[in-house]
Image 1: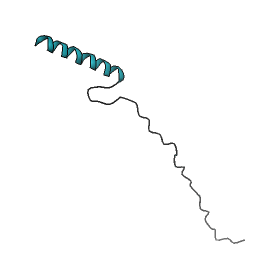
Image 2: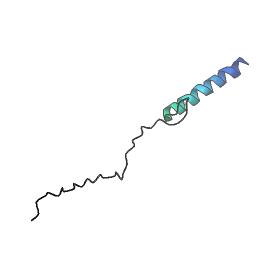
Image 3: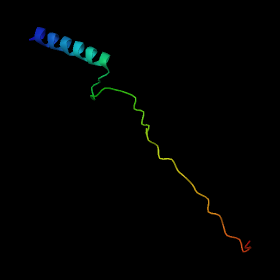
Image 4: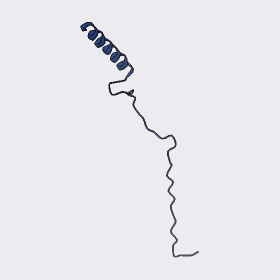
Amino acid sequence: MKSLKKTLRFLCVVLLCILGSLGIGLAGGVVVPVIRRREDKAVQQIELVEAESGVKR
């Protein structure tokens, strides 16, 4: 029984080392930095409204 526990513990350590080298932790998922940039950024176009003056030409 002791040899089974030692073997199982060793296999778990090896598995965690392999997963750790791939970046997968106990919480799961690969840790990849996420850069959230929009390719199509909405360009704000501001139009100035010319105010009419009281002077007519």
